[in-house]
Length: 429
Ligand code: 4AD
Ligand code: MG
Image (tube, rainbow, N blue to C red; front, side, top):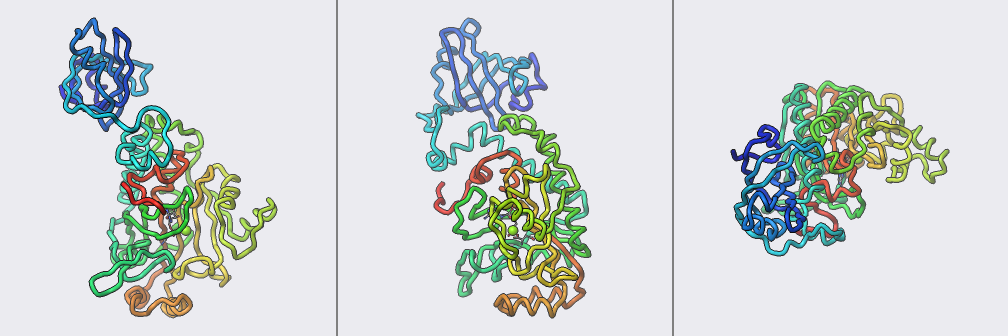
């Protein structure tokens, strides 16, 4: 029976054939242990010379790392194996013999691994991270579809910017100037006025000169936008969504979290509701703790970490000063120096994973912001139209996928959370 590694549990004590690569091996004169992977999982194949004969045993023993094979054997239940099963090999067919594989089981430096990202992805750890990433995406679609949202795809090539003009990627669009999308938000607002509750999932680009463990040049964002919804109601959606994603990973990625040696007790506590702290109170707290920060300044990574450490769940920091936030955020009803927004800060030092806000719905105020932010009325005319024809209170947010993957997997750097990271000094492979 031809099957895959994750399916072997259906064939205990039966003969199966699996297409696989040799991840690693060790052998003695009488027995060889083959670490096999097939994309779905990892399993150990045991080749006993006395059972298979000299020829197959020598074939197994000489197999080079990453060679591809069809391996045939009997599935055995084995409680010591991470997957719970082992394969008693009785036949091998070599599909392709790999030449010397550059990534050996020994330690490699980060730059070397990044140069070989196309191969590094095959490792057990990277495999686990990609599976968790996929589960987060799957759970995202499930959550929003179950809650009445419609998936909408905003454009990647745009003529306007959502998050300021300093880190735009510029390109020519025939005779016109165009930019790669920093955020689909403005278009999602238009979509919310057509479809009510919408969400997007797509790549976004920021030419940020930041070389930190949280910044990518190209990253993927999930951006829900909701008509007839105020800031407080949006926070409830955010905490329900993030809890749902974390609990889905805990349920569906047990082997992966184990391979990553993730402390899951911390993730188990991630259940709505999440605590909220105002920007004002956060500044007071940081000052008390001896941080050098004044009201009106944005938080850096150490500030976010200090605030997050007070809680065992993600925490919302609400109502930031208007001057350090985007032009479209609605002012607080009783204070014009702060806006109705929140950043969601992940626990354990992983920093901001969501930025969200209620949007300005008043045409005159939005026009005023265009002037203050030097936004061309031409490029943003369509966005103003949304405030002319049945404007409604509406809110939305953006969750950065890679930072969320990094937090849930417990990775040190976001470069491991996306298949082919685009970093300040890296466009290869
Ligand atoms: O806070 P940001 O800039 O918010 C927006 O773009 C809004 N327009 C979203 C919205 O309301 N629809 O970005 C949202 C999230 C951040 O919280 C962070 O998780 C992630 O995107 N992010 C990055 N992730 C990796 N590398 C970068 N350079 C990132 N910049 C932002
Ligand atoms: Mg932000």
